[in-house]
Image 1 (tube, helix red, strand yellow):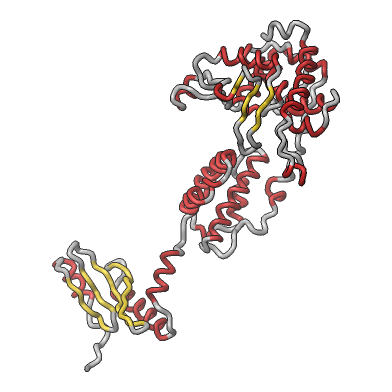
Image 2 (cartoon, rainbow, N blue to C red):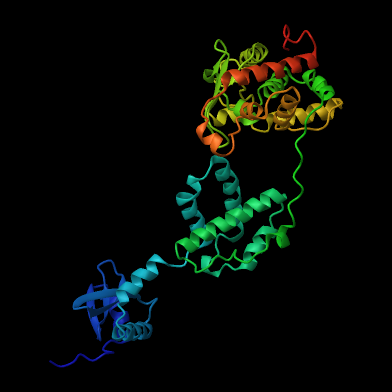
Length: 406
């Protein structure tokens, strides 16, 4: 059988066939075939045998891939066959590990990794993933260098902690890229973050408000609901997020118990409610109208986003405290809602409450083996400690506090 010679086609023939639009399949020899589909798509196909089977791959479309270029590519693939390399396998590999854009990488990271992280991490990473998309989303993942990473961090004008979070997000997505073998090594490797954003600022020491400051705070000229929230946080030691998101159905005033569901910051816990705190919670709930939340939002725009009912914004109390300090210049150091927890812990120890019980009142896990095997909730012991602490707060406020919590 005579061997079919290569280079049987000409550019004039190809253009003529394309203009005619009639479906055809014409061989150029050596397995290279020009095809024209019924919808007018002209394509180069390379047919070959490998491992005893007939196979074919698409090289590209005509005229994007010219006749000369198609012949060159066909020769390259035939040479690979002589070395035992299957061009079809190489093509599949190339499609699987094509060069992604950073935007595509971020989308994949969101779907496979980000959704598995804690809610707060999803929010903080989410902000910074948007920054990365804006700054380098169109870049090829394989072309990103350490210099690009440094430039991305430096052009974002935010505080140290947020820049550190941006750095974590960058490391996360490029670790994901390396895991998918889109890149051999992450461009974040070798970067000394201190050289980019400096050393971390000194962490602010938590305050322990003095008795004089507690007197000022317990009589603060705030809106009633904000004052009640401050008293409840001081007396119970719960996190401001736990009070912000508390639902009425979890507050059992008749039982003297407030159930806090488990969160990323701690397991579920029942907070003993002493009489004064029960009164404050009842007053706060009464101010909330028909809301399902203990401390509901007032902003119409915020409520509209959550079908008409939601809890107060996480920053609402901090802003109320700062406004009070700015407006009235009380004799008290500037503090945050979280400082109320450290204040309670420190005063409890001063009042003779054991370290273990004071830690449990803050819903902190006991360390080591003891924390694993001791599953007792110490509800009664915590109630006694909270009664002692609340009595101290009432003493700081004034003897009429029990009768008139407002």
